[in-house]
Length: 475
Image (cartoon, rainbow, N blue to C red; front, side, top):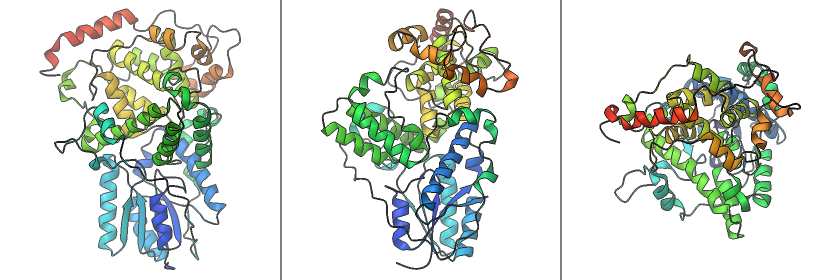
């Protein structure tokens, strides 16, 4: 192994185990782990940027316990890496691949610049189970529907996760920014203290959570995962977002549970592959992140106006539809929303209220700590009807019947809606401690007496719009 240091450029891979880029760097020489605050970081929503800061803090502590450091720099990634190469004498830079359009453009530019300077620049897998270009239909194209995508990959061989490598520290360390000076949580304001109650960042917490889920909850996962009041899911989305656990680690745990006869294990693996499908689509059809995946929906009469009363009520969890409001408040307090609830709030906004899915996507961008560019885009377009979905586009979820089915005793609603309760739980009152003061809301307020858009009226209006298909020639 050379004594010349090697730069490990970190992005969404804040872990030591099952880290191909780290493993390759550690074999080549002393490792300098680097995180760069560039445009991709500054463009994150408030909650995601706060959560990234918490993840960086946890990972820095992990490195320090091993005699290593996390070097923080700010600026254009290409320029920062070139500067670090000059400062340290490093001849190699390694990183984990990302697949959204902005990341691909940036990484291509970085790799080209480094190679032109005579520096070895290598990208590695690690963010996905399957590289998007390796999954093809029989005709050599990409998959547009999830079910055949699942069948194509479910029996593929997946290597066991890599162990944590032995990492050598360089003789000298380059200068680093101070994480606190970055103030990544500044946009959260007083809401940061509320989010912190519900957040356990870091690879150690991720591994512990996954182990407990596989030991006690995966057996009932297929049925219980739809119950929003139950702690019945793995909650790995947050950790996968920041790479505090790898999808291969999650797959290996699920596969072992399946071998042990745990009934819900295969369905858990299917959910991991849904995330893969989202990135498959983002890679092959990047427009899914910003435009209707089905172009015939471009003329659909959605309203794309943040100032509308319906939008304000939806964002504030004051629509007068309890399931919708509970879900929106759960997100504001925890930075997370139950997956069943995500479908309900998205359906209500895009179908009952006829608001463009981009409005909801932007709000989730700002409020979710498990925000993921591919999953968020696919989820909104799937529910809105403009995306890849084998089910009818005119499916309209009814929040009342959904609540009756999945929260019959109203435990979820009571957990998050304070109004009307003599002794509301802390989870419900925390909403009012987290929201902007300018909203002027209080738990003593009366709950809305009627929905901002009635369920029957909203459904009929949506179906009427779908029936008049002058806005689309096909679809």
